[in-house]
Image (cartoon, rainbow, N blue to C red; front, side, top):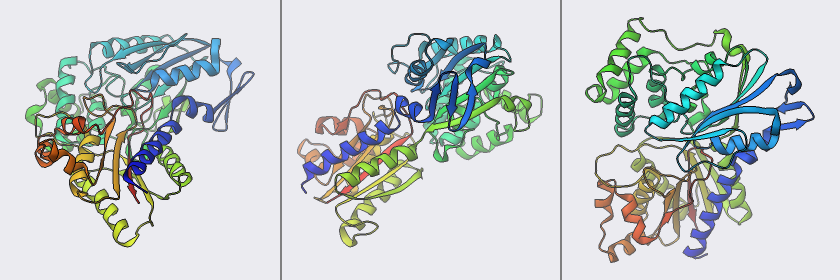
Length: 442
């Protein structure tokens, strides 16, 4: 089995994984309508019991999810609005798709969130609201607390992204300075019936972390925020109004987010319809069909990107040497989401940086391919979803006068892989369930 076949199979496998979490597929598999009877994972709703049905949503996949709901419910839907990342929208007949900024929120996101809030304030006990949540939903649902401007939130978000904080930590902080996150959107929807359909983009599928948990009880507190700020030593990078708001919260002058005993959650159902685990299972299934001995390593992988890449490269070496943890030809898939602490001025994303670090570790190994992609089709501020590397990557880069270690130090993985034509460019996939990594060994 030559390297060309390995590379082609790796790409086929990751595409199969992404297809499994396409919103049209996940909604079709989880929701069934017969006459006025709606079945969601075994729970039955009588649609004729509701006066109005509305759709709201936030996240990179929210427009595609809205289209799937439109196809399912048709003219039963009275109206709605979803906030979606620029370039990730699809044609909708009833629901408005509002394009906005991600990962740093912008004015368009704020305007769309205000429309969502106004819609919810008009709903009542006899209304049904579907809330469509996917990765990127936190940045795409900006509604800063009193005294905090959108500009403050933008600076705050950038500081969190650059310091290497995990998505759980970022969302903990974002929830506390929002009017809609951390369960507060459910409060706005109450007393209408609220059904949240969720594509998970966080480790462990924790509901209170996905899009900063707008429709679920919040376990975090203002005290947790200060522990995170202290951990990353970023007090001096946080705008004063944000720090002042955290201080007020710690002193009890600002109400904590809704907790599990709040009556609003009696009228709320939160359902995960797609996750990283599903993508990994589908990828493994495709690898089996292609004749590989396959293994799901974990969907819980997090940590510093370069270190995680070294571990994946070490697994490839172990397979070559001993046939463990799976025999050749082998395909090992993993998921989760790593972090990059920005030190250079280059261009790239965590998946491209992963592939570059892996390329350095597998240099000279003729029978190894390692691929890493973001399932949403975008990796960092680039048009690439990720990159693919093999044992010849460094040799080919040296022929072009590039020193891999220098590009890695400068966080410049995009400009490393572009001349090699090893970027993976899918365009927006209209889904988002974290990252997918593949190790191939022949």
